[in-house]
Image (cartoon, rainbow over all chains, first blue to last red; front, side, top):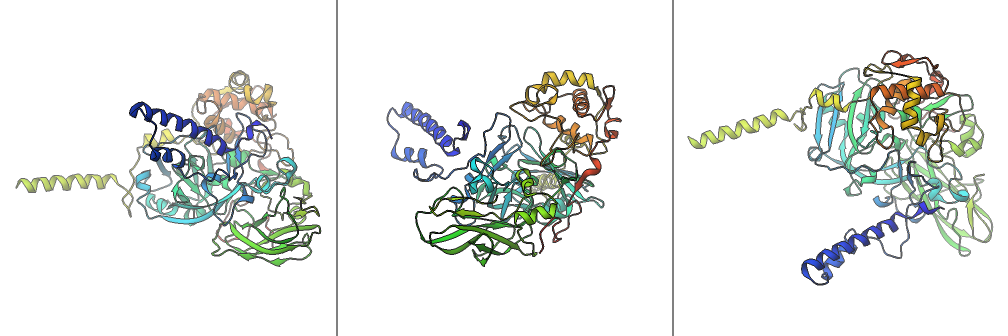
Amino acid sequence: MGSHHHSDRRQFLTESAALATLVVGAVQSVEGQAPSPEARLKDTLAYGQPSRFDTTVRRAPGSGSPITDTALMTPLQDLDGIITPSGLHFLMDHVNGIPDIDPQQHRLLMHGMVDRPLSFTMEELRRFPSVSRVYFLECNANSRPLRGPNGDSVQLVHGRTSCSEWTGVLLSILLKECGVKTGASWIVAEGSESNKYTMSIPLAKAMDDTLVAYAQNGEPVRPHNGYPLRLVAPGWEAIRSVKWLSRIAVVDQPAMAWHEAGNNADTRPDGKALGFRFELGPKSVITRPSGGQRLPGRGFYEITGLAWTGGGAVRRVDVSVDGGRTYAEAQLQQPVHRYAHTRFRFAWEWIGEEAVLQSRCTDERGEVQPTIAEAAKILGVTPEYFLQADHFNGIQPWRVNRDGSIQNALF
Amino acid sequence: MRCFRLLTATFVLSASVTVLAQGPTYRLGTIPSAEEIKARDTAISPQGKELPPGSGTVKQGASVYAQKCEGCHGPNGKGTRLHRGLIPLGNAKPVKIEGSLVPYATTVWDFINRAMPSTRPGSLTPDEVYASTAFVLFLNGIITETDVLDATTLPKVRMPNRDNFLAVEIDWKPGQRRPLGHYP
């Protein structure tokens, strides 16, 4: 890992230390004495930082350059329950810098095939009836096998997914206020960052459960995640959940925007390109024990992980400790939310022999997470195809070696 | 009497506020002017009917490219250490394809117009966008060196993989089975 891979938190600590110095300086110059214990406490604990012994951070899978996309992965192996802390939410941005938006100046413009175009301030959006819903987001490029050094960590391979409680107003309410005209069939959402990222969404999804969110996990959506406003299209590839949302056009065809027509469409061996794949398939992954970790010795371990699906709710998760020869049903953390990460747990006694741990998700529609061989068969490709493919939801095996070390056993 | 007049004034004021708030159910939001919508809506649809006046040739595009694009995309779109090249144009993974998978030339124009150059997105003039679009399409063997792109000719460019671009879930309906899903 190169010098680019400093942790966000380390950077934050450096910055806050600098800030603290500034504040301390200001206090001293006014009062002519050291800051009060109260002021000191506010400087270091103002945002409730984790313990200095906690090293949970996001990581990048490769070396970046000044103009490549921002990519930071959620440390799934270090998290419990189903909510991803906002500061650990994955980032995968197609923008040149994170915009610094003043919510007082921000407007959501809605226009196109509507009876009345409308412009909303943030204050107005917060006055609408609101909902809070637990939804995962997942990058369509998540889970490419063997990503990162040695391809051995659940964070670098599968960490482009996170789960939050999102609060906002249903897009359907805003669309009804505008009055959607007959013949309209799509919306085109646009962000207000410098390159005005654009995505098309069928009107059926926009009127169903798509959320215009201003809060994440109880606080305003963080700048990296779209402050002050973002779209959340539950269960769909996260490229559709436009950040820094500022414009929605109601139209009768998709925009064929670059990131849906020139990018994010996989090519197949038959020369066809697969665009507009919205829903994410059922997926699960064991987060502990997982690649790169080491079991300290034989004995009891709880196998735990996350499952999710673009098909709604996870119905069941099965776990195998023998590489898929036999499976047994895992326990699901309740309640199971639709379009949300679902925590599963499975009791296991390690007897010191080689074992291959893997999980399999079945969703409410009866779709089942495939093995990589089954996934390859569906697309008419070889397993190596998935090294660069999107929408891969194959079963992830982790091999536990006799010395307790664990590695990716997909290939 | 004076009190009554004050009440009337208050009523008139609140009535005018109500007129500004336009949503039928919640009476929130304001109606934007046609000029505001026009200024903010720069999107170009596949038919290209929103394209502005202007034009550009491949030769002019080579000049724009050298000044504003080559630093990242490399000489003749070959790419640099900083950024991928422009041949083929757009994704070509996992399987390499010839030309561009982008089904419409308007997509290329729209993206250059809104997002390029990455240091100053939106700063190119319409002529520069037509010209740089012409140059990258020429580099990919899609148009010839003498072609001129404008609001009429650009939407007519036949992209090589238009029929190979499958919009897999374009007819998405809630609750339907996922195409390419695994249902044993």
